[in-house]
Length: 198
Image (cartoon, rainbow, N blue to C red; front, side, top):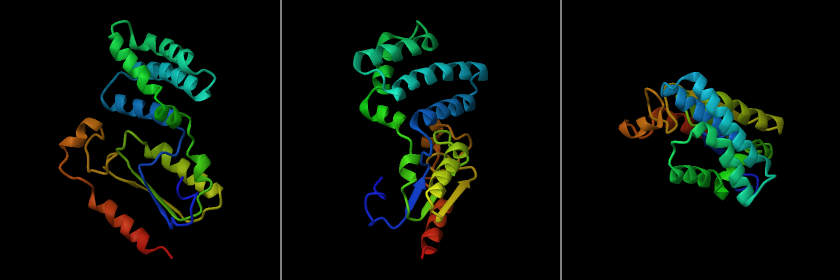
């Protein structure tokens, strides 16, 4: 967003960045994490359908305020079940409907990426369960190239998680147990790419 507002940005490095609309990213994140945790795949897909319906209500923007809160609650109640404490249920709804989250769900990065004309390096780890390289990197690359930006490089790092740590599972619970802060090979790629810019 900054790069399209000023010529002072000479290049962009996008680390585990979103290339798809926020609601799609959140659904993919939920699916990847739950499957990696060993949840039953049919239950994961059923849950995704309910959350997808709730997110769609938010994205469409036809309802606001109390009406939206009630509609999202009705969409999620069946999948969360009657045993979820009311305070926990209310906290989830409030989290989904805070202004930043609503913006994030509705925002399509492609609309901004198509305006970026400076060189872009975008990369992910293949164990990133929060921002999947498989769906986000192609979307980033496509949006940039469609706008005529020919200075685009994407890269997927093997065995790195969302924080670019060498990982085993990629699960967020693993982050704090990994001693490595940031894989040196990522820094090396960034330096090499920057040095190669004209």
